[in-house]
Length: 83
Image (cartoon, rainbow, N blue to C red; front, side, top):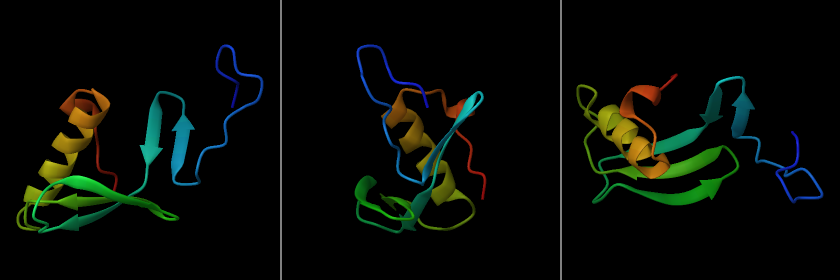
């Protein structure tokens, strides 16, 4: 990875963040059925995100996509759950 302007050394990213051509992949450990949607912790396998929606008929997945889009300022259509 190349250093940002003004930086003297490249930044080391956690293994659960991968930057590819045209995409950034972030591994998330989602926990549906929480009292509120929020980032709860960083862990070795990814970011722990509590989801207020139930894991029923895609509701939690939709809520996760909306939360990540809002958090990053990205369009909802550009956020994708890979698996």
